[in-house]
Image 1 (cartoon, rainbow, N blue to C red):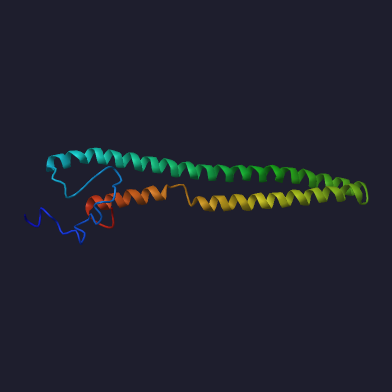
Image 2 (image 1 turned 60 degrees about the vertical axis):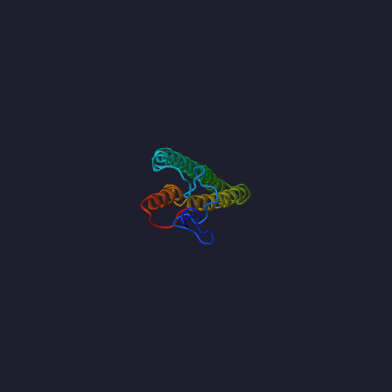
Length: 159
């Protein structure tokens, strides 16, 4: 029996350090006795499975970003609504302030102050959500595709 038939299992061989670990796209054992034709024939199937997995990851990442962006945009809509309402209340307060000495316009200014506080809180939450998005590019998917391409080239770290 040659050393090729029974490999030394005390150390890893090549780019497959853990041959017992399940692979991402099905079972693959680099030490199998499958003919090269079969292995080459598996490449299109594995490529298609990889492309589908990357597309699914991009879709999930874009959906998460759309939810954050939509929530932030809705909160900016709330801010705009309260800004218009605040303007109307301030105009009312000025008119009432000129008509009487204190009571009506003071209550209008209190309402305007409360609306201003609501606007500030909603704007801060919206800004935080937009910053969490970190752009609209699906960065995790792009990084994963780059890693896959490097693996095909035999460069970098890969499974």
